[in-house]
Amino acid sequence: MNIAFVAAGTDAAQEALTRFTERYGNVPLEQAEVLVCLGGDGFMLETLLQIIGRNIPVFGMNYGTVGFLMNHPEEDQLPQRLAYAQHTEIAPLHMWARTTAGEMHEGVGFNDVFLYRETRQTVHIGIEVDGRVRMPRLTCDGVILATPAGSTAYNRSAHGPIIPLGAELLSLTPISPFQPRHWRGALLPADVTVRFTLADTKKRPASAVAGPEEIRDVEEVIVRLDQEKKVTLLFDPDHSLSERIIAEQFAE
Image 1 (cartoon, rainbow, N blue to C red):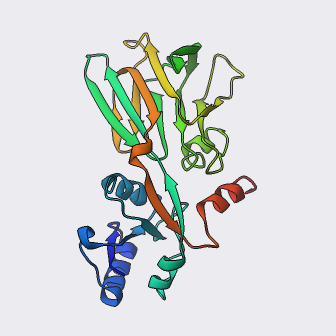
Image 2: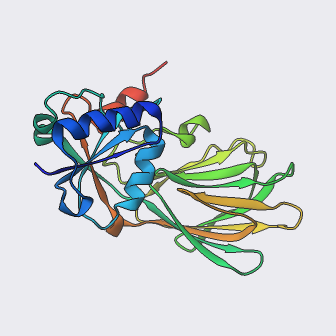
């Protein structure tokens, strides 16, 4: 099996890269049948953005902190682990953002797209789903639109629901909502298009984030799931992403 390795810049990941390369070789990405990613969840998400369109599965090993998207960092019998790994496809959210200056920007995020206030003032956000106004004004610190894979990350810290893989849903979760005070978000079909509009932007500026892209002073943000940019993650049979998403709902 032709294996390519990439590693985060930490000492632990770089030392592991040296050991894996000496033991299994390290082919160029263009010749690889599988890509092994050594690092944490953040580095995995960066790697996934870089390999969109390459049609190469990615097997992560945790040399970071949480490692929700990663497997255990065992170095023995790697070819056997790759041969028996379970495949999980995930698609990212595609964001189009227009700033108050009229500039258009795009971004892609596998976990989520979120908007947040830039100053001490709350932001006023209008929410449309498939062209229909669902909330004329949400007064809050921000809002998160999360995929199932990203529902255990920022979305969960904002008290959003955890979504099992395969549920074909997105989670729309407010960040510190002030009005409507008791609104806790919504579950949306995965194929919807969500449009956020920002009001009173001079007094209440907001930024939008998708993956590594952070766009300041946005006025309008449109988001939808991009099924054409799917990537394949590999997991050990006893350590699947679906199992971890279920287990996370029972964690203390």
